[in-house]
Image (cartoon, rainbow, N blue to C red; front, side, top):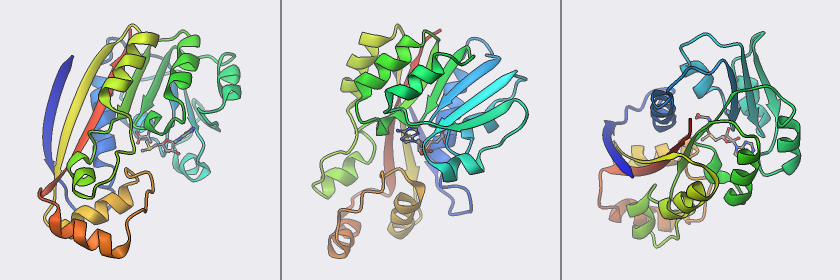
Length: 228
Ligand SMILES: C[S@@+](CC[C@H](N)C(=O)[O-])C[C@H]1O[C@@H](n2cnc3c(N)ncnc32)[C@H](O)[C@@H]1O
C-alpha cells in the first residue's frame, strides 16, 4: 500500500473551498493508464472531474442526488447529467443499460449508507474503476480534541471491502491544509461540505474546540482505488 502526503496552504478566496476535492480529482486522473472515451461519474457534484478532463471524449454521464449540484455541472451535447442515488439499487439497474467504459467517483462514496452494497453494485457493472473516498483519518485530531467519533469509515475497513470486490491498486493520500487563523479553519469546515453537515457541537463546545485545537492545519485522508 502506497502512502503519499502533501501540504498546502489555504487561501481564503472565492472557490477555494473545493481545494482538496480538486487535488483528489487531479490525483485520480493521474493514475489512469488510458484515456476513456465514455465516462461515468458517480456523485459528480458541480463537475470537478468533468472540468479536469483534458482529452476529447465521446460521452460523459454524471450522476448526483443533489439537484443544485447537477444544475451547476457543465453540460453539452456529449455531457449529460442525471439525478440518481447510489444508495438505490434502481440506479444500478438503469446504469447496466447505459454506455460507458470507465467508472469514476471522486470524494462522494464516503457518504454511501452501505459501502459494501455500493461496491457490489459497482462491481456488477464490470468496468474499470477510479474511486476516491475520504476516510476517518480526515479531521483526525479535530475529532479527538472534541471527543467525537469519526463520521467516516477507516482506511482499513475500505481496504477490506476494496480487496473483496475489486482487483485494484489501493493508495492512501494524506493532505494537510494550513490556515492563517483558527477562525479561517472553522469557516472552511463549515463551507466546504467536508463535514457532512454535522452540526453537533453547541456554540460553547465549538468555542472550546477552537481554543484547544493544537494544530494550524486540518488533516485529510483519502483512499484511491484504481483498477484497469
Ligand atoms: C464532496 S462532493 C464531490 C463532488 C465531485 N465528485 C468532486 O469531486 O468535487 C460529494 C457529492 O456526492 C453527492 N452524493 C452524496 N451522496 C450521494 C448519493 N447517495 N447519490 C448520489 N450522489 C451523492 C453529493 O450530492 C455531492 O455532490
